[in-house]
Image 1: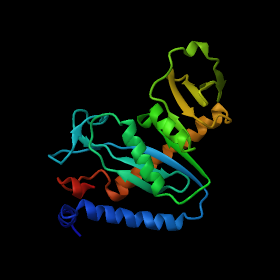
Image 2: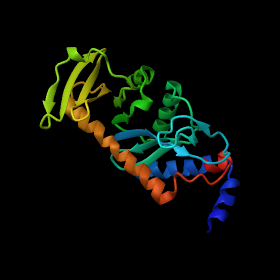
Image 3: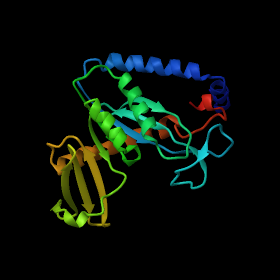
Image 4: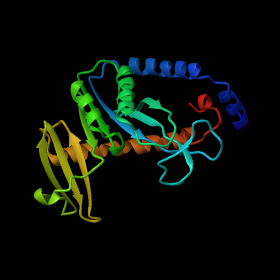
Length: 239
């Protein structure tokens, strides 16, 4: 069908109908992954820039098109299998609040079959101690990038690896492990927080970096399924 035909179809889609389609996808995913005992949930965000008067589009974080209105959807993928588990189409603008992130994770967990081990990987946009405490209360393992770096880095002992291109330091506090990574090429720091305290800093860093595959999955959605194409001015049609 032509693009105008598809647009007219989606304009008539209600939120209730969209939720029914999503529930059907969830049903089939549970059937396929019913015998899986270990899941890795990769959480990520995406910016979709709009150029019209679309409902609920707002100005906010948009590194490519600053001061343009956008949507800011959240995605959850099964890291091992590249399955899309759940997503939320949300307005742009404003920082992700901890309560919203916790609600998002609850919906992700509701769509999973029972398993023995669950690990969450997320970038700094999802970071908050309230979110961390929630995962601890549910006995969920996690590896999440911190949104801030401590100031007292000089007190830490960094160990160079990978021919001196990267150095690691770590410390434990309140049952959590903090891994500081220094990139010598651009003098950049990043910090990862995890409750898998028995793992070495190098293992934690490499495990977190595998989350980068989410970007490829989102690109597949953009180039293969026109994820960035906003086809309707109505919020329900775009959802």
